[in-house]
Length: 197
Ligand SMILES: Nc1nc2c(ncn2[C@@H]2O[C@H](COP(=O)(O)OP(=O)(O)OP(=O)(O)O)[C@@H](O)[C@H]2O)c(=O)[nH]1
Ligand SMILES: [Zn+2]
Image 1 (tube, rainbow, N blue to C red):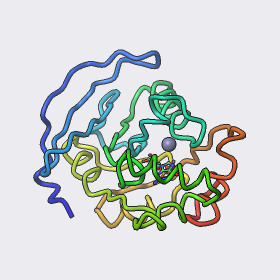
Image 2 (spheres, rainbow, N blue to C red):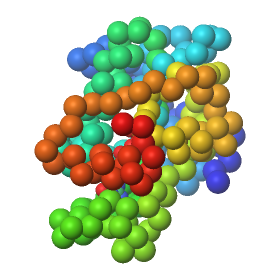
Image 3 (cartoon, rainbow, N blue to C red):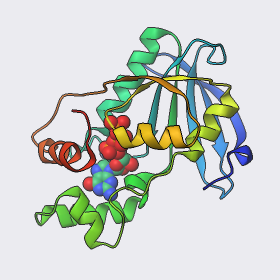
C-alpha cells in the first residue's frame, strides 16, 4: 500500500481539449510512477464531484482498440464533466489491470487462442485484477476533493476506493456502446467481475 501522504503534485498546466479546457495536474507516487488528474471547475467545495477513476489502457485510450470499452468510456467521462462544468478524472498508470502493457499484450494473445480475460491473466501467473486505488485516494485528497459521484460499472472499484477512505456518495452507470470485438470481453466482466452492465 502506498502512503497517500507521500503523493506529490509535480506539475500543473491547462489542457484545452475538444470537450473543455481542463487543468492537468501531474503527480508522482512514492515509487516514481507518474499519474495525472484532469480537473474542471472548483472541486474543493462541499458539493460532491462528478468523477471518473480510469486505469490506463494504451490500446483503448490512444490506439482506438475495440477489444475493450476504455477509449469510449474516457471520452464519455470527459464529455459529461464538460457538460456539468465541474469534475475530475483520475488517470492511473496501472495498465492492463496492473500487469503492464507487454503482459496485457501477452494476455490478449492468450485470448486469441480462446481464453477469457480472467483465464488469460491466470495462465500468465497474474491475479485477474491487480489494481490498487490508494494512489487515487492520495490524488483526490491532494486536489481537495471531499466526495464523489463516480462514473463506473465496477463494484470492486467502489469497494476498494471505500477501503482507501474515498467517499463515494453516488454511483453513476458508465455504459458505452459495444462493438463486435468487445462483446465477449464485456460479458466476461459482468460474469466474473460482477460489472453492472
Ligand atoms: N490484463 C488485462 N487487462 C485488460 C484487458 N482489457 C482491458 N484491460 C485493462 O483493464 C483496465 C480497465 O478496466 P475495466 O475492468 O475494463 O474497467 P474498470 O475501469 O475496472 O470498470 P469501469 O469503471 O466500469 O469501466 C485498463 O487498465 C485496461 O488496460 C485484458 O484483457 N487483460
Ligand atoms: Zn481497455
